Length: 388
Length: 216
Image (cartoon, rainbow over all chains, first blue to last red; front, side, top):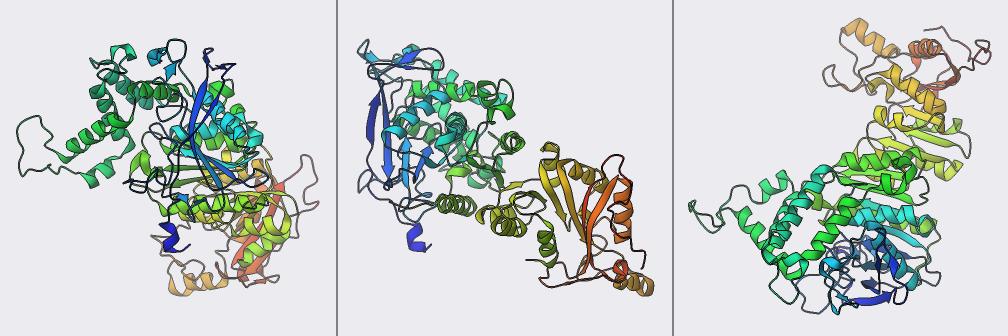
């Protein structure tokens, strides 16, 4: 790969929409029904005649369908995984048809609590049913079928996106050639649930929260910003924070003896928090964190046994974890690998040395890039891959 | 491919399943996959080597061999391979028993600490041996187990196992070339390779045990 290629972007992309469950609503795992459902998605590259060169990318908690490229010429930033997805990049849009959709319950084009409830003509708010990772994946499956994809060469994503990868492999074993779950877990630890709960409480105790009915009024932005600040810390690491901020002061030489942001880290978190409120819906925060907390492969698919849960998986699996990820530490990846290997699955596992914590999978990393590129390209060859 | 791995590859039947412990960059498994339709998996502790395996299409798990091997069900593989690693294992007896549980046959190779050059070094110089196969000082060597071909044969017998095949070879640890030593192997071979399986219950001992050599 030439250096020139590595910086090439997929260029302009646009968000598209697919609506289903118009007449018959989708029955969710909770037992509630939801419909119609619209899915916001983006595609790059072209699908081959047999519908077999597709790659589905599942986004993390606060991500969206805008995985790579730009919406407009003058966009300041490309999609969230532009380092990995594009022409000549590890997920090569010259060779593969790449799809990424916003998750159910989200706020970036797919039906969620901010969408209009046709029954009332108002936004759902907390009337939106609690959705699960399984529900999200079922919606993605409808989209994948609609796009004419017969088999996914791979499904990949990190964090909550990694949960969706596992769910795909278990739920639709014949649809996947391979699965690459990154920095993820088969179920949240008490630690992960605890941080999510603090975030939710921050939102729900905001005076503007109004039981989730705040659309068209003042929004619970303070609570949402606080929730984001907490979340952001869990995505970093002690090392990353020491390196990035240390105890450096923000725009001052000495301590101010007040409660303004004296330290750089304080200022940074405030900025991240407030930036987040401009693009994210507080109710979506509640619903998506809940779905992640409820996710439990062992109980939802294996009757209490993780081994049983993975018994039907046919995909080749590449599990990747990161050394400094303390939100979903490596031992949680090892647990899933252990259950897969007891089933005799074709599974590989690599723990990548990385300093930046849970977010490592989003950050440029030669090892991850090279691993994924070679793993995917080899599968393509083995499957008798042809581009278009 | 390293000379000892060439010998090991020649012992493995087509279409079999193989677990390679300490598989390095997956040379052997990749060869077996391409030439013998072997379905193999490796365990390797180094992130860099694991990456190399995955990139050449070899299934591999990053981890500690003594821990990883315990997860597999009984007789999960036709062969379990432990090449040039036994001398670095803290509890070799436990590990070998685990290998015998997981594999129908096991292939073990290790440097022969009884090679004449090593004997002479100790005899004439009085220092712990150091050479191309064993390039370390006593204080930084990963080779914590001193094994000879004789020791291993005795150990196999005591573990209720049988040696099906063995090769004593003269090669360097990273060499592509080498030769098989048939005369005075315990004295002249730098490495030993053994194919071992569990002795069937109630079987006559030595019914198919390899010919013993007591020279050296």
